Image (cartoon, rainbow, N blue to C red; front, side, top):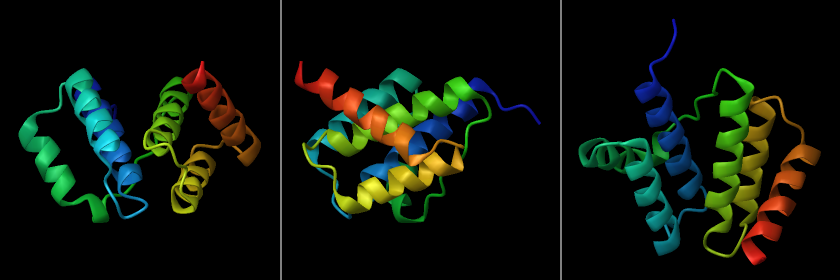
Length: 121
């Protein structure tokens, strides 16, 4: 069954919430990134609140195509970096997500290095 664009964007947003809560702390910068993504993806405030209230129980949904997988991995990496620290639990979750999407650790590390380079330029 093909997913609608709204479903895909809501799952993507849900995945970002799961990552934001991976270290047990939601930092202000993470919250701001989530707000920006909710607006970008047109996720309603009600849906945002439902997802946030259930953050500890969210299950990461795997995108179906390569482009969506890659974009979600990039967003996941950005979410882990936004507070300035890649917490070991966040890295472990990123690696788990990358592997579920058929990316290896080298590819994840490559994305992280690129993100740090872009972030610091």
